[in-house]
Image 1 (tube, rainbow, N blue to C red):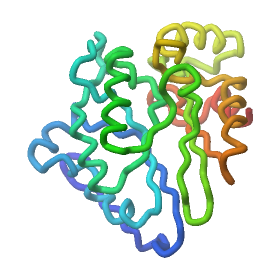
Image 2 (image 1 turned 135 degrees about the vertical axis):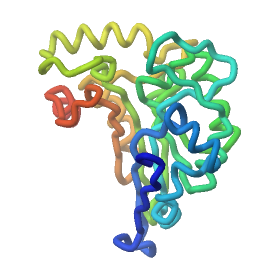
Image 3 (image 1 turned 90 degrees about the horizontal axis):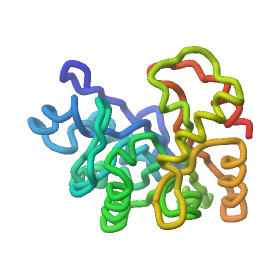
Image 4 (image 1 turned 180 degrees about the vertical axis):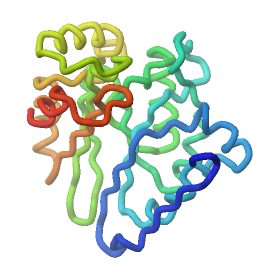
Length: 239
């Protein structure tokens, strides 16, 4: 909502009788949303979309926060922790599949990610884009009519930049990737995410191809508040 006004999107332009796969953007039921949720209930942020959500065969969103009670929250301005009870609201409005490959899922450390995955499993919600080592590459399969779709998720190191200061060279992005990987990459004994490079994108998609009729790569990328696609984003999309 903007200024508390509820945005409503009608499903009239869609065809509810046809199989559909709907992708949402970032889901962050916290901070500026807190007073609205306290006043109107946990499903309030999604009420304007309820019609289109319920009319879609499958709905996929990006969970831009850890669901954690025990993980140590990192210091910083844009650092989040959300109660796992929000999954009940997501289920109620029809959001059942969540991508975890983003730059905030480790805001409460690796313990927070372990908790998040545990809560998703307990709620029987599908997830992808994070886990231990090869699990982070694992495709999440959904059925859309007679079509099997494999969902895989990666996160670009560009998301760590505070603002856009010009296009990065391959060498600059490579250095940024290495710094980002040290903090967030999935490895043996340590859950994390897949950091996006042409090689990791090819691996994720390549492993998913034999499993499905269609593979969708969910790339969490770009620089904060910079809308045009960057050179790195285009390069990753073509990988």
